[in-house]
Length: 533
Image 1 (cartoon, one colour):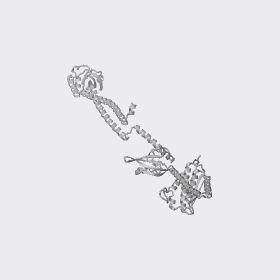
Image 2: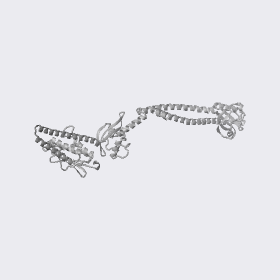
Image 3: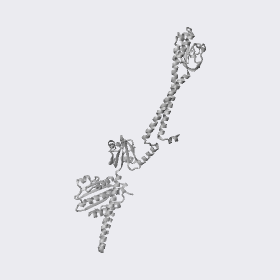
Image 4: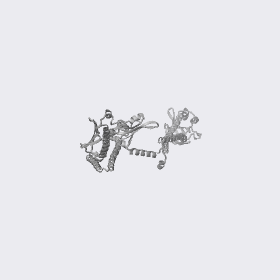
């Protein structure tokens, strides 16, 4: 049976379930009501025959006939008239000896009443009784007859048991018809309910719904973005593992499901989206110290807002990707500068070979080889980190190409045992600061940039000085703003990325105006976990 039910559709299961419940309820109701109705009908008919018996017993004809004042025939005629009027089966009057004074069958007159239930009535009791008399099984009502205060006999009025059963059966038929009507209404209601549920579930079966739910949960918990959904009241209805982890990192404890989003997420825009119905895309938000990029959109069903959903990701991850791209671009520019410088030197060598100036060629090669060796040796000795050393060498080549000079100060000393996170941050910070400094000195007579990088008390200190024209008030106010630039369009990302990297590494950055030029100082704290093993 269970296997058959498993094969049925949801609509079939609902119809069978509802019809079964209705059928059981109606059957139980029928049993209870039928028993009660049979009892009530029996009591009602018993009261009726008892009333008839009382009427006959209180008749003067009956009382006077029993004491001999009236003849027996008058009692017989009166009793028969009452029987015909009330449609009773029997109306029998008998004296204190149990001898019949009236009976539907005149041949029974003068005989003793039968049934064995008449003795109590001769003792002055009034009662109902089931017994088998001359007319068969019947319900009989006994009432004593009194004359001048003395009992002179009794009256028994009876109806056939079959009449009672017929009345009960008639009522049961009506109950059965009501059951059929209720069953029909229940079946129609079950069909309509099943169709409505099926429509609400978009025609999906429970197995399909379970599969979709599993797939949805798997997708929600596998994505790296946090997903947070709220209902129309602003209560959180969904939060995937990434969102729960970020909320926990932001200071929220316990399960967030069912809580108001305003209590879990400071400065949330989801309540605003619920009110306006307008999506908010690529918005920056502070989640208790965690900087995130979020998209918020309303959830619409048939054009009505029923909730809102937000997807978000840690901004530092996005910034790290941008910084990696920036570092790669720096490497590409460095290679281009070195290649350009190398090609110039090759052209000089080629010219000296063609001129057959071999002595000058020898001196030139020795000089440039010595310069390269001295420069690489100095940088390699001061900057142990190969990534940072390569970046600085590339900027030295670029500075010569731009007609400027980068001076790496003698106190510079960078260890090599830092994590990739620190290395990426240093590449972004140094690369962009040196590029800005080189551009700043292009309009100056003295094109000098100095660089100092050293570690003091567990902190990396970076200082870049240039001999440019300095920073204007407008630049100071907007230099960290994304896209702000005084040079050209599609610029203005260098200092923006520098500032993001410094904040991500929990450092500080200070700009200082010099008599000629600008000094930028960056301090980055180094924790034990930031050191590579």
